[in-house]
Length: 206
Length: 324
Image (cartoon, rainbow over all chains, first blue to last red; front, top):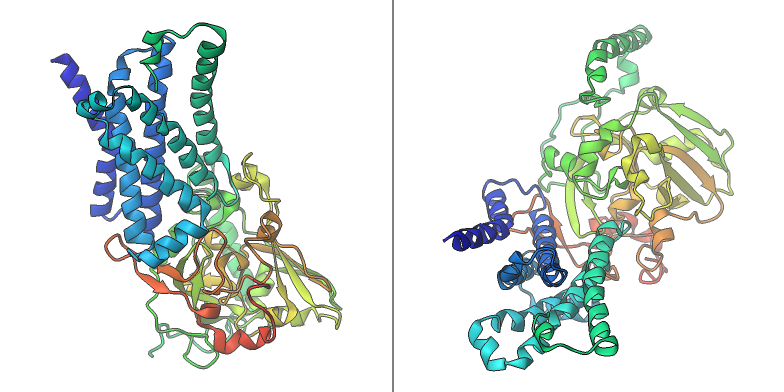
């Protein structure tokens, strides 16, 4: 009962940025250039939730806070959700669903390529996030879901390559992801090269 | 097209007598004292109220001083700005530009001129006949507005200082005052302040090139470049440098802030050109503000922002994809 309540609260919290966005759009609070606001907002929330999701394993492994690990899938799916709204916003607001422009943007603009790649990598992770797929893929599921690391790097580059004169925000996300991925890298090498691998630990990542 | 303002065709200097002029200063002083408790309480410091200006209304014609396109609402022009001295967010200038002191203000004109000197803002407002120009304003970030500026041609300002025959370029500088401009205190900003811009002499002397002191019938709000700024309607918005304190005439092409930051992305000319993309995004379309989610108001961008007829001859024979 209590677990369900907490789960619902986490769900509501992760969904609240979207609710705020819809509310702001309906009540006309997005200002003269809502396209830009919507894109910044959804892109940032996708990155933020991705970062939160990637925090959960280290928190558990360090024994600091084990409880939220169970929301990993939900939060990961929310990161994908905001990324999808971001992508739909790009189609509607920036390129007007013009496939010729889309192809040109994908080919000529590295930051678009990186962002699109990040979304594309999250897509199979979202699809295979169910228990059924987890069972069906077995050990390969873990391997597949390590794509989230690459998606996080691509997402950070997507932000960094857009910075015009102030790279502060991009640096914050970049450093955050570097720490989160660095921790995993360090653990990996620590297990592989120094101590003997343990099966129970391996099942915890990503 | 009907004129939007019924303003007298008389220069303000002819209307205002000298005594009234000095009385006004007394009045302003009195107002300053009255505002003191407010300043002490820290509320809306230096957010000088916009004063109405007297000017000649814009009229249609071949010169491009007027457009029938609908104006971007004044509140949008005031709330959606790029003025990185106050932060990189579009809303930052409206929030923080009131921290900038714009009175007293003077513009220094130096370099290759016979009569270098300084003009106080009062002199500028008194000596030049103000006129309204309704221009398209196209930002390099692919959004655009239509704004009724009030000002006078840059050429009449420059002529007053008598440029020498050697003067080939004009360099402009924005005010740089760290304690009043929080964006310049950002550790992660990579702009080398003060903000600098430049024009070729013939561009500077072109009748479309305006020194603006107002918009929508009133003096400029701080976030829009008070008290005096440049407007070059056929170039990307960042060329239209704000809150100008220094103008220098030179024989060499001056460095500009954005060019120094990323020369492959921002050229000296930066003429609006749908055929030359910014390396990171397309320039073929623009969002005419205000736009909404269901009607993004995407329109094709015009060469020289629609002022091709007036300015194309300035660049005849030049490869615009090379001199972007």
